[in-house]
Image 1 (tube, rainbow, N blue to C red):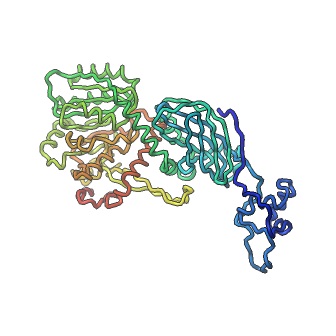
Image 2: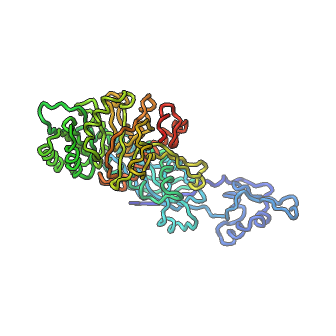
Amino acid sequence: MNDVARGKTGGATARAASLPGFDEETYLRLNPDVLVAVAEGKFRSGREHYEHYGHAEGRLAVAPSGLPRDRVIITARSGQPAETPHTPVGVVDAIKLSVSGGIYIEGWVNDALDRLDTVELYVAGWSIAFSASGLARTRRPDAEQVAGVHTPHPVGFWGFIHAAQHLPWGKCNVVLRLKSGAELVQIVTIEPVGDIELRGTMLNHLAVSHYPGPAYFNAVAAIDKAIGAHLVDFSRMLTRRAVSAPYIERFHQPGRVPRASVIVCLYGKAEYLALQQATFARCPGAEAYEFIYVCNSQALAERLLRDAALARMIHGLDITLILLEANAGFAAANNLAAAHARTGRLIFMNPDAFVKTRDFAARHLALVEELPAECTGVFGAALYHDNGALMHAGMYFETDTVPGFMLDQKTDVCVLRAAHYGKGAPPEAAELLRPRPVPAVTGAFMSCERGWFDKLDGFSQDYIFGHYEDADFCLRSLEAGRPAWLADLRLWHLEGQGSARQPVHEGALAVNRWLFTRDWLEKLRDGLLGEAPGHPLLAESVP
């Protein structure tokens, strides 16, 4: 809540003791807008306007030496009408400070003619200045109406900095400083919030805010200068905390030694544990697999403990249940589960992925044993929609580009996109199902040799919640000399149905796509874009 607001004007030129050659009559004749402003009482004289604005704008103060006929001469660099010294119109709606030093600001300012330069916070014991170039700018119809903005302009702003230290909160002196030096000063009470709550606020804001132009690209571009790196760093800290003290319970048959570990990350929906166990248990050789379910939803803990015990009793497969106090995301949860696996073969599988053929369990192990090591470091499977159409036969990468002028900036915005070979194709498209190396495979089903997974340090925990960490892992594998392969295996995938999706996850997706683009765009431009990449290790990837 804003307790006090006051304004101050800056940026006027120093008053000169004298202005040699200044001609009041000529100045008013050359600048009719100033003449009107003086008549209305906004300025005492043309000279006063010249001292405050006209000199800086390059307006003529003396009579030109002869006015040429039939030719325009410029009498001022600025075409803006004369204005009285003004206080910026705007407000800081909220400042939130988290326990671990996450600082979030949100507000608006009408800077269509005089651009915002900094947002400065002064608190007892600390201060910080947010550069305007690092703020996300949004459309705010409510603020535009208050400010009298009649042409589209993103008056809204929000920003985030992770200070990574505990900071005291209380009253904050806020200064919105424009390029001209004009200031808006407010006293704002900082709102203390939890770290997880603040991350949710930002991701939700990123997802639902109204960005000018192509909204998704503007959302990605908005976090590029500063917010993205701070948000990734902040979330990485929360991820480490979430996996630091897991609760682990094992439902195992004594003496059984599994040959492969199926790792499944659960979030928001508990029912998929029982469904997956029921379908996999039908496969001959299923007892050679252990299942490790890691849950990112604390609220599901009681049901999952009960369901795991029942599934073990009914189907007889070994189950390890890992419960986390908060959502650590796909990467960290799977990395944690991998550390508790008892085998040298790791299978990462979505909860809404199900075996399509009864020979899956035996066939997977046979492929691991029979294929050359370069084909089994990382491999995926063909995935199918519930209507029978092909969903995934490997992944490749494309770029989506938006001209800079559509985003009110000088440079174009280019964002990477992961695409699936054969999405929507007939189920028996032989050219798509052929085993071959591919740029990447989806984390909905990914089989990895454990030593290779560990050598690559697992999935990157920079990605928030989920999306693009599977592609990042496969590209790091390719860089290290082993491309991902598509194997002759088939599964159903009820895409998007295995977890509870909320606006914060859409915000996280925007951050992850920005991060993936930042880390991989230039590398992929060197022969790794498109359905037929030119990388020598992917020569067989073209369907």
